[in-house]
Amino acid sequence: MQDNVQTEVLAWRSQLRKGTLELAVLLALRKQRCYGLQLVDLLNAANLGISEGSIYPLLARLRAEKKVQTEWVDSGVGHAHKYYELTAHGQEVLAAMLVAWDEFSRAFDGLTAKN
Image 1 (tube, rainbow, N blue to C red):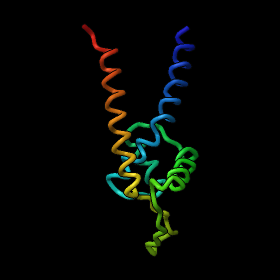
Image 2 (image 1 turned 60 degrees about the vertical axis):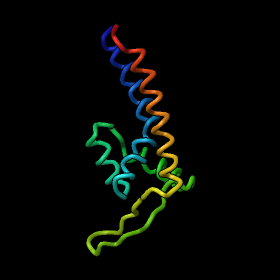
Image 3 (image 1 turned 30 degrees about the vertical axis):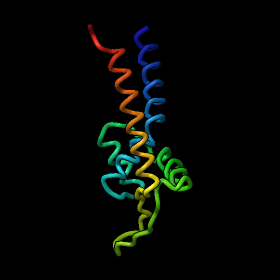
């Protein structure tokens, strides 16, 4: 029985990560521009459990939606990196997403409050 519960929770956590990955990426890019693997490392340092396979399709979509812009940078050492940074539109979307997140979070706080 306990194994089944753990399996269900792991599946739920995976869906939770997928649903919040865009917000996490935009938040990370608000602080600094990053290349893809750097973003994966930053998000995993925050214990979000993100894979390379999930970040690049999202970054391509964010670019298509004009939320991020890219620039190839060749540091002269190793290969060039494609850096991602927020656009003005991306900053506006992030601000609106944070309002929605705050409302959602407060709703859950109300549900989980112990009276």
